[in-house]
Image (tube, rainbow, N blue to C red; front, side, top):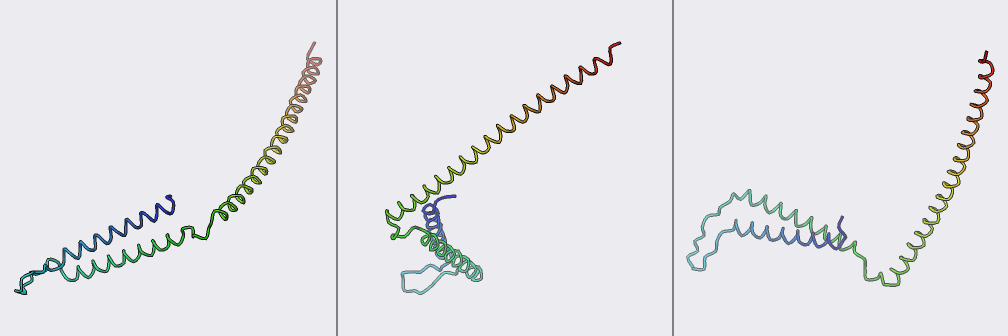
Length: 146
């Protein structure tokens, strides 16, 4: 997702496009005005019901986009957030990051200790099984010999 400034720029561009299109729609559907004093006006090209619908659509889109722009502007950092406040916030974040790194290192150390214990237990199990196999083979060897 884009940062807030990019979102704001996109919203402003979209609003400019909406305004441009609405003016084009009004221009296209309006009756030409003559500069002579005859007072004649040519007939309009579109149905008045279509014009009302276009006006509603453009008004809704422009109003919604204006609200989005206002929300994006409100979400930007205020002028009150000075360099000192940002530095203090960064220090807090760095401290939290260091604490998380320490917790992670403790978890890794515990995992390494558990791995060593498991390896020792597996080695002991393997040695015990080998000893049992030798004893079993030796005892079977005595009884099978004739």
